[in-house]
Image (tube, rainbow, N blue to C red):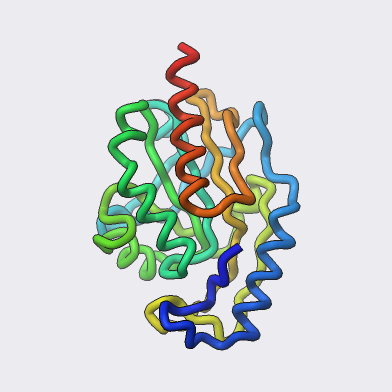
Length: 203
C-alpha cells in the first residue's frame, strides 16, 4: 500500500502517513463483494472534466459493463498513478464496451480539479464523491477516518476519510465479474482491462 499522505518531495508528516498506510493495509483483508454478488446501485455527485453532475450506476449499466474503482484520495501518490493509468487506457476500456468511474471520499471541489487534471483523469472518466463512505461500505469495503496532518501531493491538507483501493468490474446485470485488490495501482488497471475484455469474449 502506498503512503497516501506523502508528497512528491516526501515532506509530509510521517506519523499520519504511516498510520494511514497501516490502516489501508489492514483494510485490504476486508470481505469486499466477490464474483457473482449483486453490486448495489448508487447515485452520487460526480465530476467529469471539471464539471459536476449526478452519476447513476444504473444508467451506465444500461449501456454496458462498468468498472467501479475505489481509491483512498485524489492527489496522492498511488491514486495519481492509478488515475493516470485509467486515463491512458481509457480508449481500450471503451473499445471493450465498458465505462469507468472512480469513487473516493473526496469532496466534489477536490474532484472537480482532479477530474480535469491532464496528468491524472484528464477528463476521460468520471470520479464520484462518496464523502461519508456510504457507497464504499455498501460494496463491503472498510472506510477509515481522516488523519490529522495528512497532506496530498500538492501539499494540501486531506480532510476526509479513506476507502481501500479495490476495483470492481460489473456486468450489465449489475453482478460482479471481478474484484481486484491487493495489487499496485498499475496492475489494478491492467487486471481490470483484462476482466472487461473477458466479458466481451464470453458473448
